[in-house]
Length: 216
Image (tube, rainbow, N blue to C red):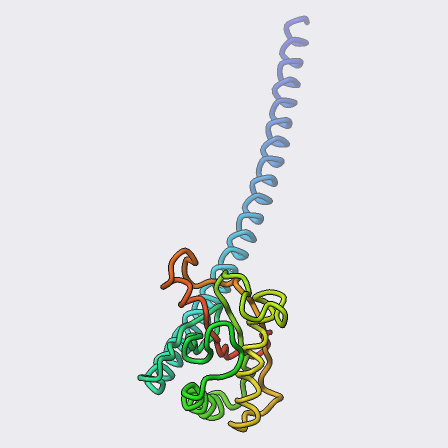
C-alpha cells in the first residue's frame, strides 16, 4: 500500500518537474525570440546609420572637390597679382597682403593696389555672381600708434581697412552693394606667429571670403 503511494507520488513529482521544465523552456524561448527581434532592429538601425554616414561622407568629399577646383581656378586667374587663394572654414578665400593695399597704420588704398582690386572685382562678378562676399580686415598685434586718436584698437583699424576696400569695389568696380559686407577681426585671427616681422606681415591682410549659400 505504502509502496503504491510512493510510486504515485514519484509520478506526480516527475510530472510536476516535467511541466516546470516545459514552462521554463517556453519562457526561455520567448526571451530568446525577444532578444533576437531586438538584435534585428538594432542591426537595421546600424545599417541605416551607416548608409547615412556614407551619404554624408560622399557629399562632404564632393564639396571639398568643388572648393578645391574653385580655388585652383581663382589662383590661376590671379597669378602674378600678389593674391593667394585658400580654403577657409568651408569657403574659398582670396587673400591680399596688407602691404599691397595700405601704408603702415593707414586706411587709404595705395594707388598700385587698385589694379589688383579691379581684377578681383571682375572675377567675383563673373565667377561668384550669385554669392555673397565677406571682406575681412586683419592686423598684427602691434598696438595703434600713428592714428591712436582715430582708431581705438586694431578692431577699428581692421574694420576701416575692410570698409575702404568695400567702398572701392562698390563705387569704382560696380560690385553690387547687396552682395558684400565687412568684418574687422583685428589681431585675433592670425595666420602666423606675431613674434617675427615675417609673421606680422602675413597677419596684416584683407580677405575676400565667398560665403557659402546659407552661411554667414
